[in-house]
Image (tube, rainbow over all chains, first blue to last red; front, side):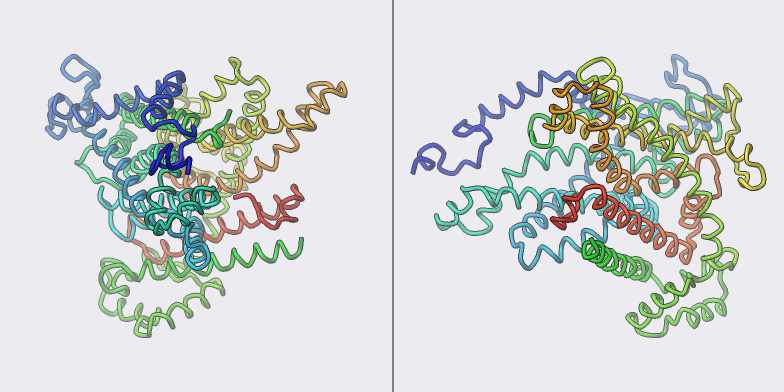
Length: 299
Length: 319
């Protein structure tokens, strides 16, 4: 009875009785107090800006200038030019877009496919769970990169196929985490209460269980994005991902390898960008974990 | 204990069985005629027919799979389309190089990762902790291959201390071998160390706040003994688990590291096979990786149960 008076249909809240808006504000306040987390937010915002706005501001990343190949940083080319005389800054900006696509789309795909599977597996434990978890074990038996390499070998090298490979490789993690959350949440008192209230299974899953699992899933997504960004760069570096002339930080490093002694700046900037964007998401993920998912936090 | 090992081994066999099926049917899912694909791009019609006959591709798929399993279990992994050598021989030649690299990297990772993890936990919230935690985060964010490029740039191109690439067998020239393996092992080990550091730190933090540590302290034990004897020993189970779980990271890292330093190991074989669409080799390499990965994890599970009696009593290993 009292539960209905307080919040008739609101999902379970970590602070009992607090309206969602206040909870969100409190989460933000706690997040803001962490300098590392804020640094992560700044890095991620910078990365997003670079990917979304950068390509409109910088030069054409594919225009070649044979008079100015491998030229060191100068006012005309702030980060220098590569072996075909292309502007490195412009290629960095367009490469950010490739990285962003690989990181965000593959994680999103893995979430869209993995969350329902994890929800259903955790909820219908008896008959579906063993099958799903066995399959997850099989995919987990393949090291991340080997799996992606294998898929790239089957599908052929391209950005689209890299994204598919990365999202399939992420799937087991998403399914496992969702399922784990469901198993914990379904033991809460308000689930039998909802059942007694006549709520249907899908209603319980999406109205009560999914919001409870949201914190852990947001953290998982934030940690998966840098893995995917590095994964794309690695596959592209190995020649199994994005193909030239499409700018990708990994592809840029492949060609930089040949000119290491003549043009070291070619090897510096793409790597710095990969590291900074991955670091940004990792810091953000650590901060969100502390704030949203206290039981997993390091302190 | 026997029951526990048996159950774990059973689960591992099921995973291996399904994994091999995934590899087999994955290659069969390729667009086009598998015989053409297996024979390579420039194969003649006779070669394709020979492959079709060799692989029994005219028979039903389940029969082919059973046949494939049988041959694999006898050590016959097919022949490379590039040089027609038996794939098993190629792998046996390449694998020790990667194992050497991995062992050196693990040594580097344990030396750096476990040590910084302990220091960070003991000096929690102080400067050393921030340094170590920062190192851990940067180590997670920097891709192996870029670290490798930077290492070559610094130690080989600029300082000229170490050779940038190449490989000499240990039996031929031990010093030359280690000279060339040092940079790759450092590069591969540093990334791994970051993961180990983070896990060691949180395990040590947990152990340091446990009741038995308080007891040890209150009975007047020196802090060094409390940390070394009590807390560390109980954190080691975590370290072992992480080592096992992260073998995949190590294998993936080896693939990239070997590519940069031009080391003719298992990882380079993998990339070269994919680049040349050498499907018998790809199929075998992926299978060998999965088998190694599953076996290592099985060993870790068992070791974990030996180190931590609670696990084998409840019958559930750490997730």
